[in-house]
Every structure is written in C-alpha cells, then in structure tokens.
Length: 188
Image 1 (cartoon, rainbow, N blue to C red):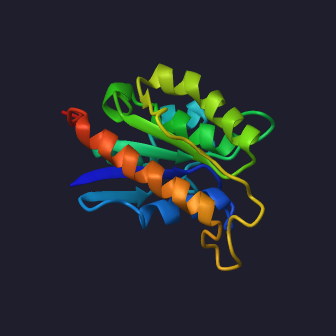
Image 2 (cartoon, rainbow, N blue to C red; image 1 turned 180 degrees about the vertical axis):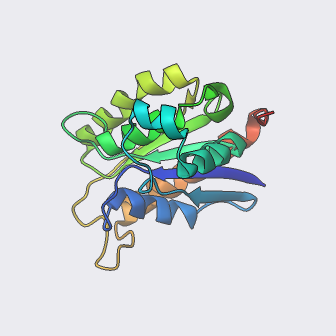
Image 3 (cartoon, rainbow, N blue to C red; image 1 turned 90 degrees about the vertical axis):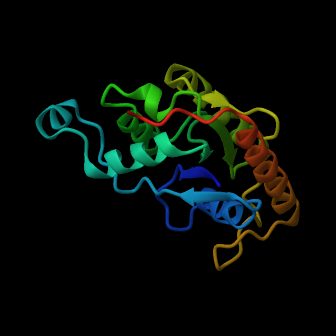
C-alpha cells in the first residue's frame, strides 16, 4: 500500500485547499492512502527556540510521516503572488535537523490549489525553488487550477463537478506515478 501525505497550506477552518485535500483523500485508488496532516500546531520558526528546545514534537512527527511516505500533495493558497507564510514556515521547520534527504529527498510532490488559474499557478511556481533545494521531485504531469467561486458548499465539501473530475484525474495519475518510482529509503 502506498501512502501519500497531504499538507493543507492554510489554517482557516473553512479552507478551500483543505477541502480539496479531503476530496482527494476520498478519491485515492485502491492500495493508496492519502493522509491529511494539518500544520496548525507548528509554531513560528525561531532559531533560539530550536537551539534551546530542539524540534517541536509536532515537527518530529510530521517529518517521520514524510520520510515514510511515497508522495506529497501540497494544497497551497496564493498570497500576494507567492506562498503563504504559515505554509513556508511549516516547510522551514520540517527541513530542520540536518536530515533533509530523509524527509524530502526524492519525494514526488504534486501542487494543487483553490484559487483562480493565475493565482494557483503563481503559488505553484513560487514553491519550485524551495522544492528543488529540498531535493523533492515536483510532479508536472497534471496540475489542478480551480476557482474558489462555488468550489465548496456550505458543509465544506467540494461542489464543482469540473474540479472534482480534474482532482480525481490528478489523484489517480499521481498515485500511479508514485507507485512506479523506486521506494524511497527509510531513515536509518
């Protein structure tokens, strides 16, 4: 069974990006699990705190899940033509500890987003330099560009049939992509 980690890039309770991940989790093909891992417990990065206390427990736990995963889906909002600070902060913490290759090395990463076409593209492009530095493998075969208008219903569920179809195609193709790759080495 393959495991894909889904990181929502927003802390907002009614986040459309979190809704995309919830929908994606229900669309995974047999033999694949999409595990949504919230980032809301990660504190703001402070080198003094890291030096004094080490990595926060929530960071250690997420790093272990990423190291064991076969893939990563990042559901990213776009803020001011870039990545959300809270999401970048989470990735910055997750890259601490001197074990970037074990946490991020060769992990396939799909980027999805619930914004207008240009906003989602801007956020995806803004993540590329960070993903390269981390040694991750950005997945470009299919990407999801969606519109926030009418995307989610009052219950927080995906309500746009076109986006649902695109998301299902992405999840199935990305899971197959992850399955074809050699297994990542587990941390020692």
